[in-house]
Image (cartoon, rainbow, N blue to C red):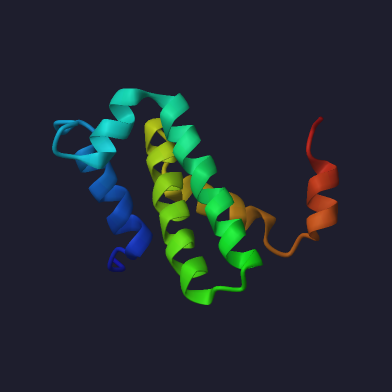
Length: 107
């Protein structure tokens, strides 16, 4: 069995902290505030990542991308979606043109 990767370990840490005391855990605090707050934080991190990219600040892009991935995993966990499910969807799409894949989606 392969060793868990970074995303797997982070997903497990987020899952373990979801039910912790919101006073001592950022993940628990976000979850206690509900999906609107989790979604807001995810959106903020996405915007900050774009701003860093537009500023051509490589180090800031790396930091903001890490924040974005973290908050995405928090949201996925709150929705009961495993990162493996997202990776399986990416695998399914592999080798398909992005234009063709988008056209195949239902409206």
